[in-house]
Image (cartoon, rainbow, N blue to C red):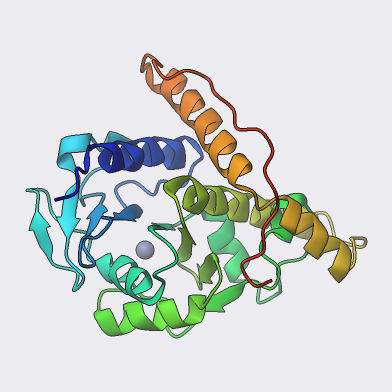
Length: 253
Ligand SMILES: [Zn+2]
């Protein structure tokens, strides 16, 4: 039986980070983390509370079919985003789904994400799931989202939000933060009359790879968590231990 204490706390920290970074939508938005050797079971934020309100002992355990098997708080009805992405992607362990404001607005424009910032270059030609703008409340819809995500780390849901996936919680959260920032910057450009100048495809790809690094995932996450703790009045007892720069990686290389 896997000891889930550390995994639970990783989810709690992620909830604080997502909230301080304005990914919260009242009590909507959720994050999950696969239980190693757990037959598809995963930990998940419960429904009915805000991302930053989650505590270690409130986190629920859900099976591979999306049914709550442990915990007393309710399960989000969009659980199938998590169960189906985790099923389709054994290479990743963490899934984030939120409704970030700028990304939702951006999704309505019907234009590609342009490499106007380092943030955008991480995602390349990001997909937009448009089979429905409704909530993903069936395993079939969850599987459709997983298919549209494919081998990528991030997907926009039309008029709805985002799905990001990572090997670690830190990685999945990093993509959520960076995608929202990229959409925000492109909206600013649109409001200013439209982007006129930006780098080419090869330039953007190289820049994107440099911004997909495990050390960045962790350092950005840890910093944002310290910010969240300061904001919430939580005493920070974890040492500041930044990771040294590690190599860039390309999942498709
Ligand atoms: Zn949603």
